[in-house]
Amino acid sequence: MIGAIRSVPPAWRQAKILYWQRQCMNYSAPPDQVVFDESPTATALIDSDLQYARLKLLRDTYAPEPRKTVAAAFAPVCLKRFTSVIPSIYTPQLLPIPDGAVLFLHERTTTSGRKALVTITYCPQDMGHTFQQRFTNLYCSSLGAFAFRTSPAVNRPGLGEDIVPPEYVPSPNLRIFAGQVDPADESHFTIRYEMWGQSDVMDGWLVDSAYQPTYVYVTQRTPPVETPP
Image 1 (cartoon, rainbow, N blue to C red):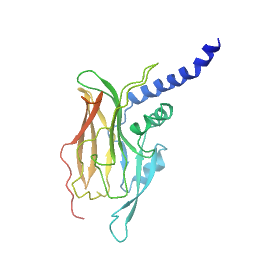
Image 2: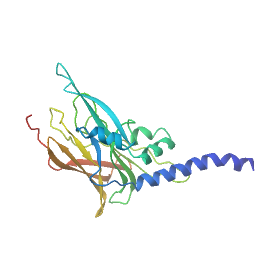
Image 3: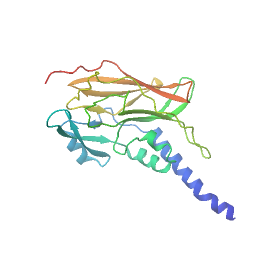
Image 4: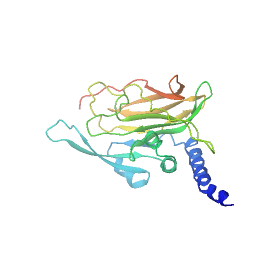
């Protein structure tokens, strides 16, 4: 009886992990929902929903007087709950910083049938980097499923192609919309964004990897071009 009582807390924790994992794997948001906003409408988003964090950023940091701006970054409650109950080794991969904007969250499946929870998180910085993923501020991760008695192996975060030109000039009024799954391809998803008044779509795939169970690859279709002020 004592042994049975002692086994209850771990089983209860694992049940919570499985519940919030299922919520994340089935999560979806409308295609017109803004998940990151650095435009004048950011404050209204922050005031409308507690799932938006208020980010105070500096732009034009090399200018004599850097420009201050406010951005809204969205992170769904289910992901925050999930990262609060899983072992801490997985948390930096799924939500690198608490105020990161979660651009995509859903289960995807590789062509070989491997399933994983895919998260794409944008972590803006003060140094003028706008929307890139080869260096520091766009994290692409995949995590295999927790089972009732087992935990998945840790996948290294995947990094893809640049989203901005080499100069890293910040785009005013950057807006990113909630990523969408492709109903015709279980490995594929898309993320729409706007830079310099131009709209583009980023494609992502969950793929098989020789170095880890799964890998997330992302690329842009028609990269926006900086326009003079």
